[in-house]
Length: 402
Image 1: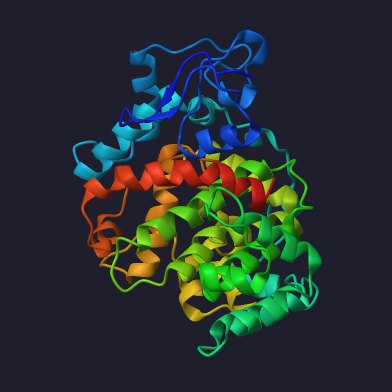
Image 2: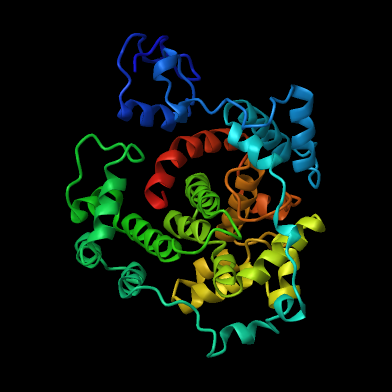
């Protein structure tokens, strides 16, 4: 494929000259930089770089129609609020450059048509039923426990984590692929886990290993109740956003909020594993009532997926910090929450606002300003945070899930 026109970034800096042959590596780099369309002769246009075409059966929307779609999406929020106003503007811009966002906002719910009887609808009397012996929570592979124990040990080294991860050849290979990808952009190839731990930091490698292990465990979950690729796209985006935000917030552990963001909806997956029909009914009811799933889940499960996810994190021996991030990511904070909890809460709200993936939510709730204020940052930092998220997400989702 030959470029028909030079490629420049948003600042006008030239990236590639017209006439060069576009390789797969260059395509990945372009997507990392947020460039989704280039000029190439028609017989050589790669589909992944030209998502501007509307989906089959759907016409392009004019500016007024796009504003109407976003107005509905943000209807529970105050558009005069400086934070919300900025995100609204950036969301509108994303509709122009990322049509999958528009598809997500326009996609109708199909889960409200579920039929159920009383036994299907109310199989769970409360949290104790889910924790009873007949319904055991999932146990992750032994290597997960070893990695989790290592990350809690303040004296563990890169060699220690390399020794643990190397026991799983598939996990080792995946981590090395990620470390050598454009996501990190090292000039020299990283050929060993020990060197990866030295280059990235042992805790970052631990975070990657934990995240990959959990995602791989749930990959076999049927996608008839929820689009699993969309679910993990949302989750990975939350983890990346939390980690990026952490670099702007004082006294925050970036690796912890990455895991908290990545796994914040883990309770929802367990509901889907053990009660797929009831979960589908709950999602459908949320859609009918214009609510989010966590607002109707207690009626069916006795608890929200957030609270149950926190209990799962406790069972898996995550730190109390990560359990709290998961447990409180839907809270209506009456005062400023701890910063790490606020980061995961806001990351989830922001990713939903931008229409990146879906965790089966049906509306964008009102932004809790106590959580936002807990971060102690300016709303002006949000645009560069989102730009960085866009650069990293395409590459990250490929290694974490696809």
